[in-house]
Length: 297
Image 1 (cartoon, rainbow, N blue to C red):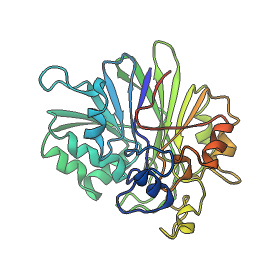
Image 2 (cartoon, rainbow, N blue to C red; image 1 turned 180 degrees about the vertical axis):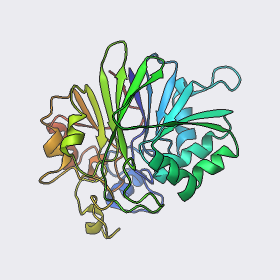
Image 3 (cartoon, rainbow, N blue to C red; image 1 turned 135 degrees about the vertical axis):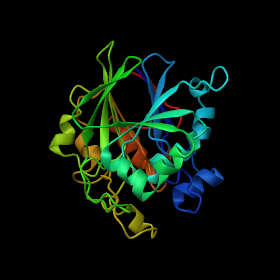
Image 4 (cartoon, rainbow, N blue to C red; image 1 turned 90 degrees about the vertical axis):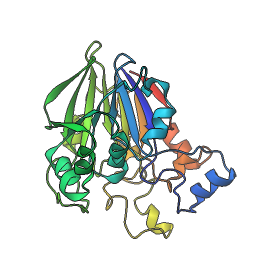
């Protein structure tokens, strides 16, 4: 199984268009070593020919153009087989509208996510005006054969984040995915949004060879300290990396071969190659994803 990180930043990308925080300034003026990043999504394949997209960011066109394996072969035949959604956030779903030229799109989502895309953001209803959408209901705890040598099991990731569009606190607003290569039995977990590493969520990491996990903020009050927002990371549905109970403390000791932070906010100092925070992450055996990172599992 191959996992390609198409985009490693959180919503807004890095740098964010309207932000002049220290990290955004550094990537613009080149004053510190760092790389720009597009918004969060991965592509997964068991044979390097047929690919499955996990989340569809607003940067999807550029992400496809940067990765030849996702580009069409003859005519308009695409190697992209389906899109699977972890939630209904705009940075994970706006790219669906950019896939409207396809004749048919297979979309895997929970009922809560589908309802938000239909009745909240109207993304799904708009998309259906352009192409046929085959909805596949995602049910937590159910093993699903995708075909092409891959299967998945979704799991619920509870969140108390206030929903802007309807779904309230319904189960399935946020899910993670266990992805299994059916030939080798090897497992990767994709978990770009996580408010708490609960016992139930931790159980889904068992026997995992590679974990792609929420790295949105370094500190819980990061945006407040920078004067950019009045919400904490947890308020926004994300467990911070640092501090007591942070993801670095909880994940670094787990016996997982590779643990990789994705969905990294533009304010997070781990985006800077020379930052002490980056060193702290790497010293604990974890990695910071960049666009184009490819992992064979």
